[in-house]
Length: 355
Ligand SMILES: Nc1nc2c(ncn2[C@@H]2O[C@H](COP(=O)(O)OP(=O)(O)O)[C@@H](O)[C@H]2O)c(=O)[nH]1
Ligand SMILES: [Mg+2]
Image (cartoon, rainbow, N blue to C red; front, side):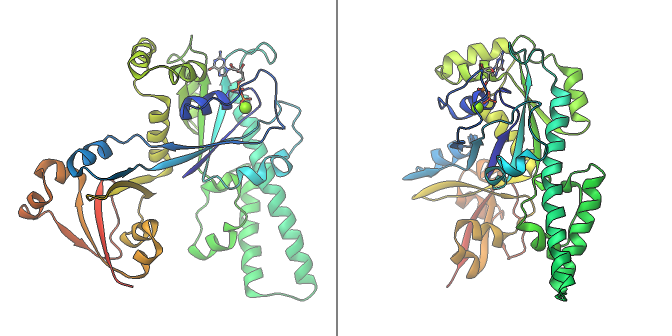
């Protein structure tokens, strides 16, 4: 899972990136739009991995990861319309999801925060970027067709793009539309920005953190939102765990920024974790909700999907309740599942395959 942090310059993207990754990328009061992105692989905190490790004592432990990308920001106000198209697009478009960091603290240069209009501006910017892509592709399709080349594929592409165009022209993001599997294939390559899952990270001044109820409700009317006290949490991430807990309690922060964001991302982006266990390795994997046993196999290795026979399956909770794998068998909780079995969060799988 790749999450791209986007937002205006000085909204605190790098600060939050540092809080999430324990890294030390340079933050700045001045817009630094020329710098390249900072990229970090963040391990997902999952207490279940620790318990499984305790039980299996594996040689190796592998946690699920999220790749965080901190992009250079857009300049406030002065950004040309559709600027994602020229600026950060090539980088942002490979993200699986976008997390928009919004300034909710006063800034000496930019003044008091205006989070709601900031969200609107960026939203418009993302929409415009997609609109430009759709329009220019439709123009090209028309030219090709005028030359007499009307393949079924081209007609299908034109039809989907027109649907998207109408939708965007109503100021609505593509993620609201549902597509058939075939149409998904047609548009996949465009990597539309408003098709990506979208989260808002409200970056609040530590003095007001936890008390922005009305603002958060206003944002929630349209978006999924989580509140961070970015600067404070960046400083926390540099303390020892024991010290950090004391400061967090003071602020009413129950979990680290990283843990809150990973949980939020899993929920809102529809990810679930399954595990593979054994003496060699205990490992957490993330897949999409609704993915099948074959998809899970493919996440591990393409050979496992190709030669898939059955998935041996039990759940983490059953294992904790029964104590051992033998206990699970004795209780009749051990299952054999076929290709189409929808994997659920907390499943422990062993894929039987032959190639
Ligand atoms: N008061 C306050 N200042 C912050 C917060 N987060 C970031 N800043 C400040 O805002 C400025 C810009 O932050 P930076 O992370 O570089 O923003 P970016 O341009 O979006 O990467 C820096 O001076 C930060 O110290 C916050 O939560 N509270
Ligand atoms: Mg930055």
